[in-house]
Length: 197
Image (cartoon, rainbow, N blue to C red; front, side, top):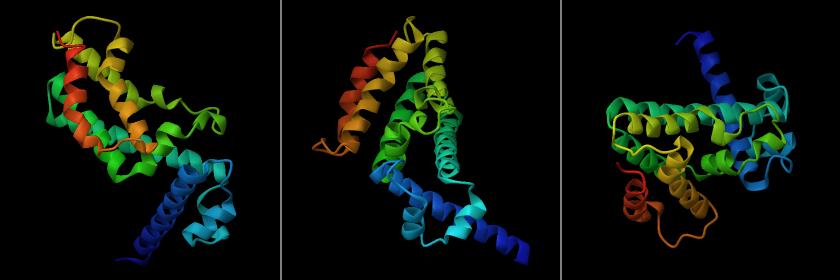
């Protein structure tokens, strides 16, 4: 591998290490209670290297937000490519979000509990971000093709996804007695019955 390619890989690795540490700390302590020295200590990356990649803590928070919005968009795109019907797409989106929550709880904690607008006032609120817009678009497509009965788009989206997001919050708060997957069948049948044409 050429030296410039090796350096590019190392830079990317350092950047991802910093983001992973920031994710952990922001999820555990919150944005305002996390400092650059905390990220240095947790990541093992020097202060100089952090400032080489990011201008400040806010820049790290914005990069994290962008990284995980893109992750959720990819997840939804993959589902849309594999499934044509709205019912299957909605079902698979919920399963994927449950799986992501169980595998990467800090990602979901940061995305759903992060109160991003408190420190990133220009960022789109998470429920208005592109992944959540696309989830609503899946529901609207179901109304267009006759799978979902005609109703207010926001109401139907909440009926389909709202319970799942609440269960994710319950899981993150540690109040569920069982894994998310064990609640899925009952939750899904209730959610789909509430909108089915």
